[in-house]
Image 1 (spheres, rainbow, N blue to C red):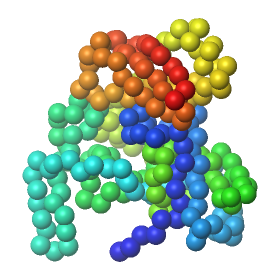
Image 2: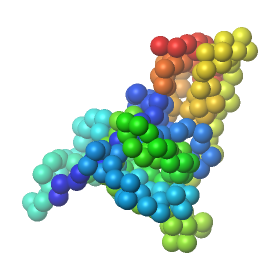
Image 3: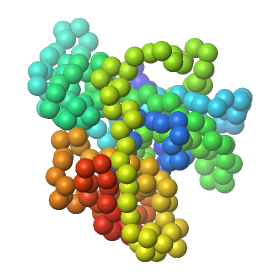
Image 4: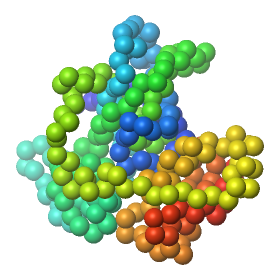
Length: 241
């Protein structure tokens, strides 16, 4: 089956490090959905403004296949080796779980599904109508294969179990920054609230616990150097690229 790319995601995530591991309702991170020319048709979006949330079906375009612990080939229709187990980051990267019990990017088919909030529809000169959404856990340039409306009466299950992921759903870090550094960054229109949200979700791999290590994160036109000690992110430097 051949899938057409109907759109691309545009945001400040130029690297995988720092991208939220899951979409979040209260996110201030915006993503622009830019349609490809073949699908840049106004009628295709008729009525979409009546929905508050959407489903995005997309591809793990920057995915690097990990070496499977156990490679299996189905004699029926599987063309590539695949691993039935993966190592979820929130479990420290050492414990393996079944691939279909996780949202790992290392899957038989590199397809992702994300629920996002529709903030607005923008009319642009070069790209036509653009959907501006929040809560997307996507890399800049991610190909999008389909968009569907989110229906609260059928898609929402308040009593659903979240498996092993439930233990980390409220895991956040405190972010600390020198007032002088923050003031200087804001004077240059730094998207501080977005950066603060990214850092509070702890972008480090779960197995990285060295409090002396300095991490580097890129977002939009900004670079952040930081360390993590206990449950606090300490900003060491914040500058434009």
